[in-house]
Length: 182
Image 1 (tube, rainbow, N blue to C red):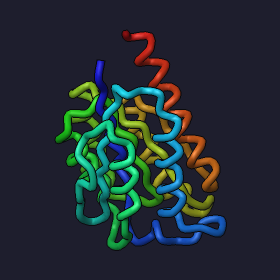
Image 2 (image 1 turned 180 degrees about the horizontal axis):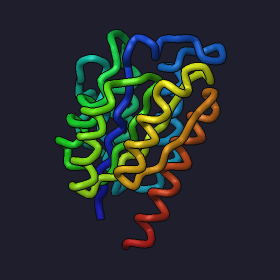
Image 3 (image 1 turned 120 degrees about the vertical axis):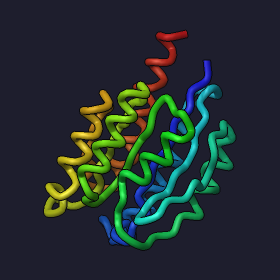
């Protein structure tokens, strides 16, 4: 049984912000590397979608984790945050699941409409909010709602170590679900 997971990553300008001595983007790169190191399934294919005010597929679905890590290491930041655009592009790969990470607020209505499309397609969207407490309220509600609509999991990460742990916990949950389905 094969599964496709899209890592839908915010690369807007605010992801270059220092976050506990490293940028949020560098923390994201490290967390994805840790996630792939923890992945127990050669049956899982990962795709990478990077979004800001525009979107780019950095890696089409593959189970070659070295290729995925290399594509993540080529991220650069800039622009605003358009979560709907990132989700819409992620859905084009017909994934079983999307892991959406963001540190900022996006226009709620389009993002929630795309979340509803994901739900109707039986695609869970797990969301991870990264940032400081003062910005916690700006993006928190939207990411919580996206996860709720799609029966996904919402996680808040207050520092880079939390981010790495959040990715690994999501992979662990996914592995257990796949094991019970086989």
